Every structure is written in structure tokens, then in C-alpha cells.
Length: 70
Image (cartoon, rainbow, N blue to C red; front, side, top):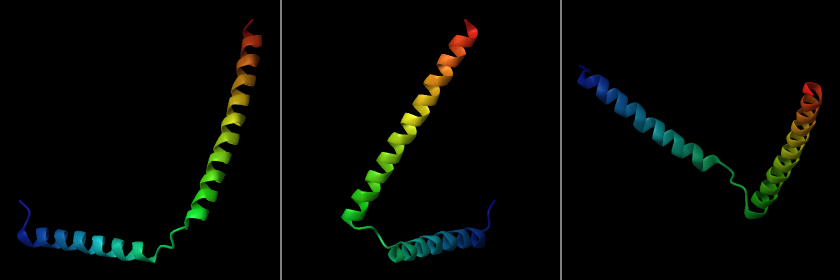
């Protein structure tokens, strides 16, 4: 069974963690709307390029394996 002091210590640690986390959130410089849109467009663009790149290699490897196994 856990001692009462250990329970109080655990609760105190959790409360301190929440307080510290909230204080850190206040220090964050959140992006404005324009930055958010710009960065989102970058992420979508890079994702599309990488997706096309992977799709291209998949097609090349599939065709090569098909030709090799014939």
C-alpha cells in the first residue's frame, strides 16, 4: 500500500508539471494567419512532391520486377 506522504508527493509533482507546462505555453510565439497559411502550403507541396517521387520509384521497381520474372 502506498503511504499517504507518497501520494501527496505525487499529486504535488503533477500540479507543478501542469503549472510549468502552462507557463511554457505562454512563452510560445504562435504564428499569425499568413505564416500559418504559407507554412501549410509548404507542407502540402513537399508532401505532394515526395508522394510523386515514391509513386514513381514504386512504378519503376514494379515494372523492373515484372520484366525480371517473365
